[in-house]
Length: 309
Image 1 (cartoon, rainbow, N blue to C red):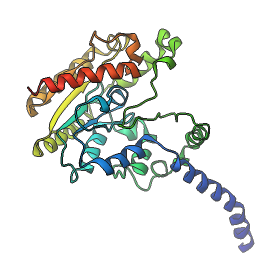
Image 2 (image 1 turned 120 degrees about the horizontal axis):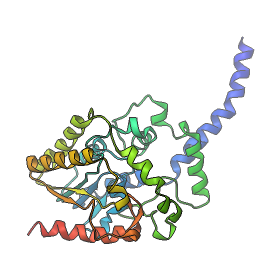
Image 3 (image 1 turned 90 degrees about the vertical axis):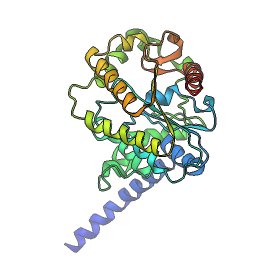
């Protein structure tokens, strides 16, 4: 028996060495979560505007074009629960924070948390943003190599000096991967992305509505207590997206948003169907291109500033 155990560990040792080495290497690879956490650690005292939300804002809002020192603290698939956590995490450090911009998308009020829609993303918050929302004893939540395919792709992209699959961001946190020249015109014309993404964004039940509303309430109360202006924003989408949304869910989204707006006396800017944006302003039907992000942020900044006077 002792001989068997000894041989087993001799067999297991190289595998453990490879796994540990790969895990360490993947964690060394730069990513937006690690960058944003480190940026906030260094600049939370000075930041004046924070942008919270999902990929719609990640690709649409250029923080360097907003007034004052601003930062885009969004991530792909980020939900209101994550927004609340990130806002509160540096709560004791804010000295100059004046404005919080929070994204309200078609699905924001109704969506389940990351555990349901994108469990891999829980890991990024756990590992790189000191997040305590997810199970610390879960292998999926705590080890990059729990998804070997993604881990190897990240290492390969890093070695080849390519963008990782979850993108990269600029100095102030906005995604820099949706370059118009790289837009897939075949997919754009087929509309396959549009059908798939709308199906994913359309939520059948309303079991998560109360929770999501409570997260937003905490964000509003956090801001009110510190005299921080809260601004809600629905980013622009292309007509193939907004024309095919479920009408009932869209109506509910607006009904809940306006109710919240009145309850907490916050500003709300809706650009979902804004006709000022053309096809080149979008990388796909629901995400803006790098050109569109510049155009949109300038408009948003002007609208936010104008409501102050």
